[in-house]
Image (cartoon, rainbow, N blue to C red):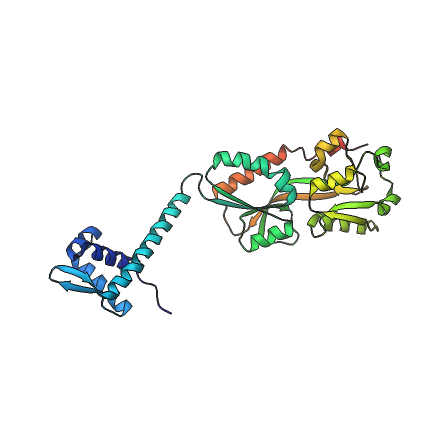
Length: 311
């Protein structure tokens, strides 16, 4: 495998080819004439052929020299572009931010956060990868995203987790459901209900499954969906019962088109936060994004369940 060519030698070679003179090239490069001459001899030894012909005080390129010059110009141009791109990254508001977020976070958290973020970093390139917590972890591990808004992972020591808020999963029923009319859940009826639940592959589904397994119950899941809005609409129509956090259906609960009721004596809590690869230091843009997420989620009234749950 050939070793890469020295960029300083290539720059001297390109300058010499353009000026046609060792004296002029040395002056332009702020080097001695002998230093330029030594550099060209070293370059010719490196490539294994003669690149220059001297005709008096003039310097002409050989055929090999013309070929190398063609590639050298491309190399130096790309190096210039790289330097320019890195300089742009150092300017205020430039750079990129790659976010992973669950469907819930994409719908209810990100819009307000990004609206505020773009005011501070208008030229920052933002990309969003939607997906459940398990997908977000995989994207973090492979360095395809910088930050992930997700549920707290279990037994994951490679990621730093910054808590945002906790919520409680509850039964969600339509206004015509017997539980809504009674204002309470009949324990014996829980396994008999039809359920409309979020994606079986999700962390939330696994939490629900574990909770009811510990209660010695198996839920009769009829429909699984990846859309919170679709789940809420089906519950309103009486197709089944869902299990969601009340803040996701805050508007519907206030309008009384949906009612939230506790799962039982034990609460089922989830813990949300922002995760990133532990060994990586956060940039100013990432720190700002994290801070905005905390502010926005504080204003989401996550814990309004007490006000909106049917007693």
